[in-house]
Image 1 (cartoon, rainbow, N blue to C red):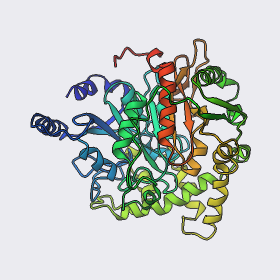
Image 2 (image 1 turned 30 degrees about the horizontal axis):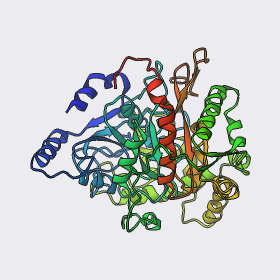
Image 3 (image 1 turned 60 degrees about the vertical axis):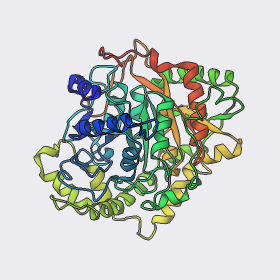
Length: 481
């Protein structure tokens, strides 16, 4: 397959792939035989897809969140999303590199770094921070190493790397896509979604992986048990016509002075959206955002969920050679395995989670969760949508990911622009990757009510077609795609 050759040719520069599927070529040949015999499974038949290393596959590949702790472990079955991909005739090319444990290990590590692969780099500036945690999925998609990829998101892990690497990412409503046999962080926030170079490609992959699953009770809330919306058909140039779209100005303020180029590009986008027939409602603010921004409660909810959810996941494994059964076991393994880079890269997130001493069955957890929901509900996105009768809100993706995470609502990010020449180079807190520099991309997110993906995709597609930003940005390294 051409994509495997492409990976072999250039991935040494970017570190996007953890492992290739040793069966990919034989699977592709079998799918070709099916096509020759007149059996075509659908529009995705024979196309390549990459999976983040959180997404379980019962084959010769690992599912290990970038760590060594779960190397050799085996899931009892394909994750539901992987099984759906296979049923649709996609070829799973391999597993992508990622921020180890989905950025839920260290406070001093780097986006896209994990102990098994090392660094992942974006292609728009030397040593570019790819953002995370679905880092490899985003960079590989941008570079044309695959047609599309799957990522996971708890808070920002699809939207942020998608925007940083000049692609489209969809964070679905929690419950639209099954999380069965996907390494969890938080049952209340985790979701599986597509990363692609165009809105249409992202929409068609979302179609393939969505739908109720009796192995994930959150999917029982889906209103689409009988029939899914047609996400590809939603991609119409008129997708913005007649829509009411709000701007939460009080959130954009948090970009600060360094975000001036993003704000300038965003204002141009507002003009485009208005000219495309949308009514723009300014100051559709998230009233509790300042309280949310300084609160530890959302992180405590995820920590409590993780303590329970990871134990449940580990208990379902068919093989578990390192005898990992709890967060405490994961921490102990990581701190005592030289390959894990400890203590240079700490385990502070786990240390704090264990010290917190609660899981999602503890007394007091439910009230904590309800307080957190307010930040995204009446005090946040849902309140703004309701008050102003909006179809969506738009935000720069850099400040548009955290509130939807809290309430499990969907979002889609589309390329918006890049930092201009003369932008001061800014490193991450560890000082090993560059997160802001000339040419580094950023995106705009369309955010809406639960189950509103069809509407959001239509709006995002119309905006994409009006702007075609992706085609205008230049990579630092000459890589054709």
